[in-house]
Amino acid sequence: MHIAVYPGSFDPITNGHLDIIRRAAGLVDKLYIAVLINKQKKCMFTPQERVAFIQKAVTGIENVEVISYDGLLVEFCKKVGAKAIIKGLRVIMDYEAEAQMALINKKIDPDIETVLLVATENYSFISSSVIKELASYGGDISCLVPAHVQKAIIEKGREQL
Image: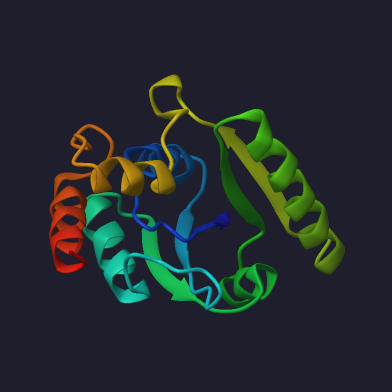
């Protein structure tokens, strides 16, 4: 069985993330979406909220499981039996950062490969940070995130006013 992990903070999940998830799910038997718990990063949504958003967004993709994790990604991969880490690339700066992380992970465990999927052109400009900033100014994010995520971002924005 081919098992892979697609890690990230997903704060919030975007249509770009979902594109990578759909494409990666077609390459493996089991895909874990690993929602990062990073105490140093200030997130808009809790890990539980992010997991719930993704679970709703991936309904119907049978081989995908969403779980949060805290710790080394390579250790999580070993725990679930994954031999591959899936990462999405939008721009050249992503490559530099992802290549560095891939080399570090390879040093920790040489048996785990990193697979880089290039973002589809329609999603190459989308990032969670851009979405949050755009939403904070009242911009239209309806084509950038699932509808339930858009609603949550708008509600969270009201709460923070």
